[in-house]
Amino acid sequence: MKYSNKKFLLNKRPSGMPSDDCWKLDVEELSSLQNNEIIIKVKYLSIDPYMRGRMNDSMSYAAPAKIGYPMTGETVGEVIESKSNLYDVGDNLCIHQGWQTYIKAKDTDPSIYKVPESNIPLSSYLGVVGMPGRTAYFGLNRVGKPEETDTVIVSAASGAVGSVVGQLAKIIGCKVIGIAGGFEKCSYVENELKFDYCLDYKSDNFTKNLNEVCSEGADIYFENVGGDVTKAVAPLLNKNARVPICGFISQYNKSNVLEAETPFNILGALKDKPEHRFFVVTEWMHEWEEATLAISKYIESGKIKYKETITKGFENAPQGLRDVLTGKNFGKQLIEI
Image (cartoon, rainbow, N blue to C red):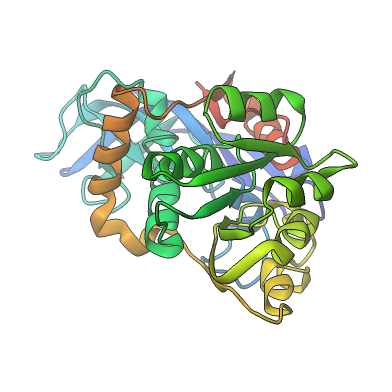
């Protein structure tokens, strides 16, 4: 059977916020399967902040996305044809092969993750029990190293990563202070996710309010944002504080992220420098199953809740990324095909 695969190719490097002409929509007919290959019909695309950095042609923790190749990203979908002994038609798989509607892949592709049978929606394997959830789990537990008596501050607290970080910290017994943008998001974080507080960084009284609810300082700051938020948090960090740096989305549209003022600059200027480092979830790739199982159990027991923004239509992927970069989305951003 013939399949027409739509794919967004990276067309040029952006300057600032990515415009539509940074991508080119292309269509190709998939060739016939060879032995040990599968075809996946994609159901959801994951849209994540890190994608903006990969569009730049600059040094980073990963190579830049290539011009003329599919835009980087993870997807989840169903195997519809198989010449593989590993995967059968009907299997649901996550795979990291970019923005495409069909994916032909070798069954040895190391990015493939077979979705287990469960009552958890398929889309969640790109979010709360997928890469963002695993990022929260390992960033908090392995870099943050929380203890029951700790005070934890989480930026981008309503987002796909931050929302899980805060709930995991609450399960441990920590005092958790979230930071988010706007009344609706802060209300959700406090009332639904049960953080102790959530402060609106857009408020004129943000720094004053943060100092009031964090009067005894903070032991862990989970960094997702950078910029002015980090400057407000930094003076509150206690001696021996830990700062897992997941990202700094406020700086991602800079023409050269490496020349922007980063959390490393802000935290490094403190007299008592906290333990801080950038991390990527692939550091614990061999332990991913641990995180997936733990978070799945918390979801099933009601201890972890999550929110998704699902936008229908493959053509809306570029706008989905812009929405993530400007904070218009709520929770995990997905594109449904």
